Image (cartoon, rainbow over all chains, first blue to last red; front, side, top):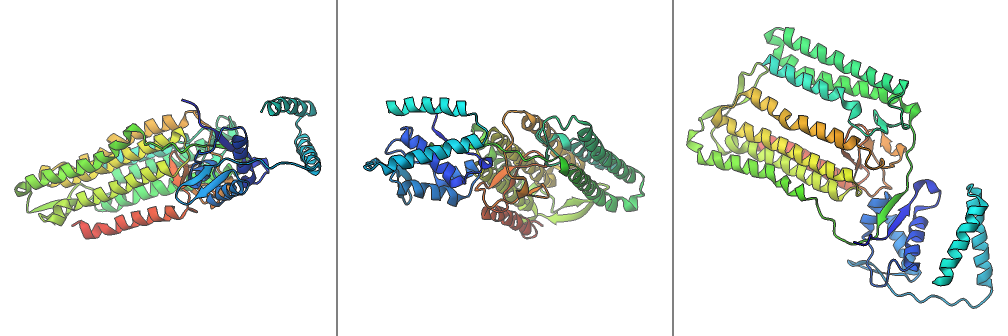
Length: 132
Length: 325
């Protein structure tokens, strides 16, 4: 039997719980591990497994709904919906992308991760992104 | 009867003597300690000190019970278990404070499965109905042999084993212990199910469910025996010692299971443990979390449902005078 996708929360990471949950779920959505029509587990169950407050998970679901990934239905929970990827027209977004990646790399280097490991990981990720 | 009481005290002492081993290896007197700390000089010293307290108080209690005159027996028999538990509590707290400097914060990422697959109870959960069936069977048997029940029968005994309170052959007198036992068993079953559905998925959760069901059997057995005692005249010492038949294997099995290094400790924040015993974390949605003092699970007192469960227990206890003679 195929294993269900998992999300991760690290209380020691220094990153707010909502952001960690949103980021983990977004990875599953972008990678297609959660496809349109899939129902997410209840807020209560996810909150209990991750050891966070109900509202934290509810906020994460709301944030992903605002991004167009989920539809929140009362009594039915959160359902993954087809999402139209917004088109990027201007070059400003590319500048933003570069800044965000630079920020992430800087953060990882500040945490002590060797530059060579980051570069290797980025190269491997680039191949995956090109294929998708 | 003195020997029966002495056996119970020694059994209590043996359980408390083993208390430091009734937790995960990463915990000692409810303090999360570094790997290998238990085997260190400080760890061994701490365990030794606690055990000295237990041995001293149990020896004193047993000595008092055997040597005190009969007129003091009732008072001694009642006071000694309280003294043993109190001394154990003080000894535990003493070592807990002594080890506070060695405490570490266990941090580990948690994972949640993104699935809506229903959560099934383990196969043995249906055994939870067993004690209620036992009590119902005892009730049916009493009903069928109603005429053989004495018009007045003993229901309470002093430390010497002499009856000092009686009940009459009425619905309340005969079935009261069964009703009360059923209430208690029902409450334990609700706790077991709430523990299963209100805690994080882990292998310890199954062990906890099994342990709670065993406790339910213990209650069912004791109240079943008390109720049929009116008809069968079961010796009081047999009723007093009966719980050990379940408690001893239960403690051995649970201690072995819980101390197995099968999964890491639940990384609950140290600051949310009040006195390292009570868990209060409003930011944790779990209703039950793994205990730190001994094996098993405890309530997250920041969860309002935990107070509902305690209120239910208070109601069960408060109902005793109304349903029992």
